[in-house]
Length: 301
Image (cartoon, rainbow, N blue to C red; front, side, top):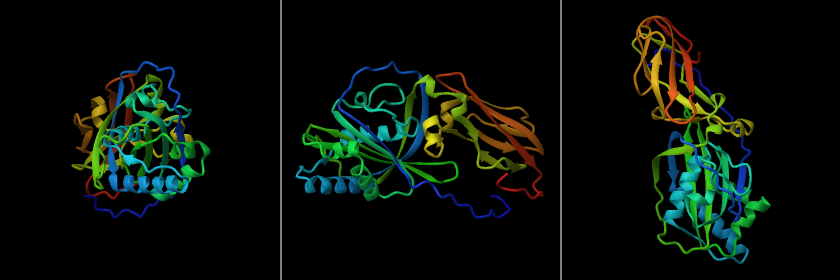
């Protein structure tokens, strides 16, 4: 536990949302790469149910039948929610991080709406979709009978939340209706094309750059692709299991275990590094400073 009280910090995350939509056309499918990034986050089934309620309210207003939340489609939508933390679809129809079209995750999908935001309510998300002609088309599909709904949250290294929302529409009736309102944790392995695994997209991060002797700190690799950076989407924390060959340039100063957890041993500096386990051969690193326990430090250094 740190001795020095930290000054309060706040971030005004962008209220603007990035909306994407995928149409029915499913043509060329690209070969998947072998790169995998493991991400942990949460599905808020309560928010998903609120999304469904707003969607059905809008459909009723426009003479469309209500949709039911299909459990299988929702599981697919959750995976898509995690995938959009790595790759934001730029074109319609949507592509996944592995290069395949969104329908490859579930053959029942006929249309997909996505959004990324921070601090936005389900009602605001649906309103944003309504105000977009391509997303409105998905909401009002006359042949849609069921839908998968994702309300995924990934927590950044500093505790700030980034939300991804996905609707996967289907013309099939719901096989099993999802009724849960719980908040459940998931860990997903996201297969990613090598072209998205550039060194500039990956960083080895930690909450602080300076620690005391005997102090322990968890390293947190992060990912921020080109589109994510352009739209101000906060970097996604990648699980340390996605990396191997954890090393310290100076173990006597700071040692590191196979899970990326470092220990300050004596005053000095050391560079911690790790290699991406699959996909492109990328090594990321971060310099860590260790100071005596009786020395005050700037916790934000």
